[in-house]
Image (cartoon, rainbow, N blue to C red; front, side, top):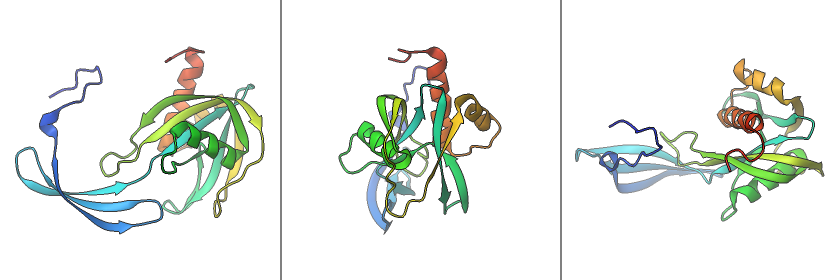
Length: 195
């Protein structure tokens, strides 16, 4: 069945029924589960799923057209990456509050205006994580206060240069790429777009 292009993906005939859940491992940030499922044709299978609390991502752009990014070492990749500020949702925390908190913690910036650009599922093949991407403007400086054990460097780039870094493959983090491209669209379309 093809999607009609209107965003309707409610295709119940593809649903799988979860018969059992086994917690394989639980870490500080995520839980790894093995699900026993019944497939649409009645056969049985398993699915490995990573449960994550979700998070917020912030494209912070100042009045002069500069965007704030962070660099940090990512152990899974074994290297430093260039990313938009982002962080995990605390239990019960609204995504916009998380975005404001993470922006301040990582960059020392407070946003006078915060607009949700999208909510996305970065890896739906194996995770339930939802990331909420915001554009922050009307920025004011305060004091950065990274989480314990978090070592971050804040960098400031002309926005157009960062769009080029995405196009040239210099930025590889998916949430950052999506956030930058959606912020570029927001700027191009002007105030009130998407409202």
